[in-house]
Image 1 (cartoon, rainbow, N blue to C red):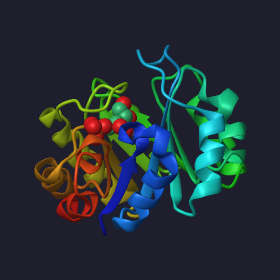
Image 2: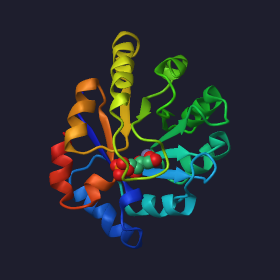
Image 3: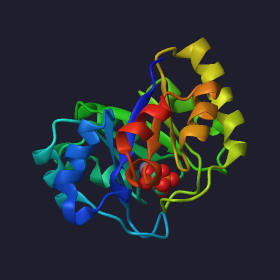
Image 4: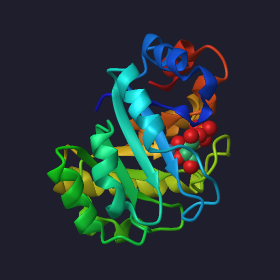
Length: 213
Ligand code: DX5
Ligand code: ZN
């Protein structure tokens, strides 16, 4: 599978978001990753619906919305209508996962399900065949700039082995602590959508994106 590089705008200069979106595109990144945090599911608050609408007006890139919120089911409709191309939500949230997936599909969007570091792959397997993507978090969700958790690599391999048998087209996304070195490790383990925030935004974004492929 080709590697997809997804730029997390949590690390962008939000006062210059329009220029940052142009920089993401010009640097050859494939997706824009949009982190939504509610201050309850994770101990941080990021940005939400009006910012997503603004991003949608400004870019034609694929926008991947990562919901780190308590009740995703309540908000799928509004995020879908505000410009998400793909929506991922956490298995550990309070909503019924099957209902959230149906709602995302009913809105005509790609669906992703995310698991936190402490959640074993076995818990997400019942839902894998009904989603486009599984997000294996490689840090505790909530903040950019954290160190990659190497003990997540076996989870990626386990999920890729399952997908090869049961659903070959599955995308496996990783998010947290991705740079040139950890990108090579997660690709080797079977991930194909690599999200990066601090690594991409801190300097030459095009060179950083190339180094992740
Ligand atoms: C963290 C977010 C990530 C974050 C990654 O909870 O989901 O998308 O932006 O940041 P880095 O790449 O700096 O670890
Ligand atoms: Zn994220």
